[in-house]
View 1 (cartoon, helix red, strand yellow):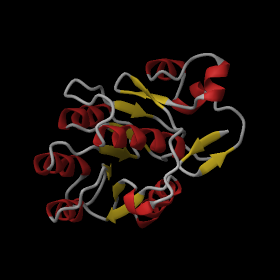
View 2: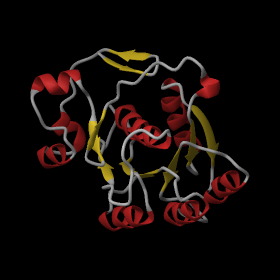
View 3: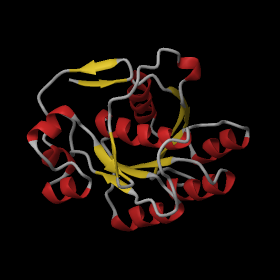
View 4: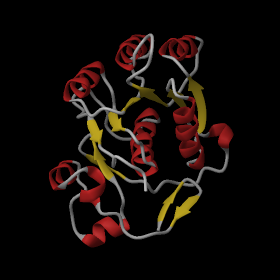
Length: 206
């Protein structure tokens, strides 16, 4: 059973190597290990530390961390919003990089920003660079339908906290957001030497 913010999911243990893209990736991100470890603790490693998906229940949405979801696809915005709201996060959305920058300039204090890479107009990397100028401490998770090494390196250079490859699954989104929220609230270590986490999800959602 995997417990998250007010949600319990029961099912077979997750095969880390299949879910993350092979044994090398599983070992790299701390997913390889004993069967008992995988059965009891479905987590990933970010910034050299383990990020568990088991978090305290947060019944009060008013005080819950705010997540800004930026994606030009209405379907993807709705999908990510549902996943995050199931975790009892508050969610604000923007359909363009320009709108996201406006919200931040107007004082939106998002604990985490989930940002699409491929967007018309101002793309995700340009938006990321400008967000970091406005808020150097912003925790930004990049999402992309392409697992491109050059884009990942550029996102890392610009200060992205993690890079999710679409289609995004709740397990990996939850773990990435949880780690960023912990840093936003002053828990854990987040510095310039942090290593960008690349989370590869399957090509199709079962």
